[in-house]
Image 1 (cartoon, rainbow, N blue to C red):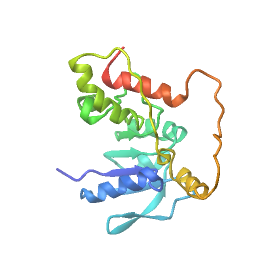
Image 2 (cartoon, rainbow, N blue to C red):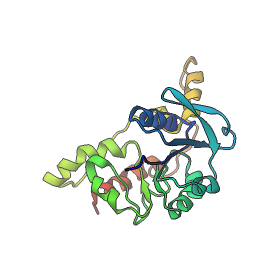
Image 3 (tube, rainbow, N blue to C red):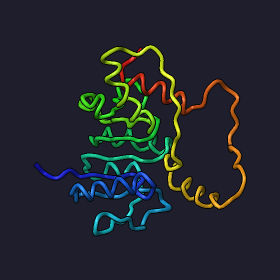
Image 4 (cartoon, rainbow, N blue to C red):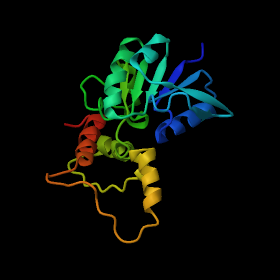
Length: 207
């Protein structure tokens, strides 16, 4: 069996950097790195060597025959790039929220519903970072006794917002006093709460 041809889109970000590290550790060699035009031409670490970053465009991801592309980019970029790559025959695993709740697109946690990954039509969605451990804990409870109500509190890492957020935290850390939230809230719940509820339902196949 030939070695899979893999593209990592968002290779200069926090998640993309770790993705490259894991692929190198596992012995994958046929890997290319993609990011925004601003990062194109830079180099990123890949095991004991480096990869030159290419600009992530629809043409770049369909011009060459990739077997798999791992997307760790914002929602608007995923919306622009993923569908075309999937139509070109690339298996796309997307980390953004764009496709998670779309009907017909598997939302997969391997330990919980890994069999759903085989049902993809070119696109697989990666759940919210809190939904992954939550569904792993809930799956045996749901199977054994069923679920009626769930109350969850999450304490989420800044890294979930990407490399820029990590740098912002580093700069703010020496500051004194409380740092105010930089968003307002005028509804019943935050978007993160909605995502966690709806994604958990989809993964566990609950009503």
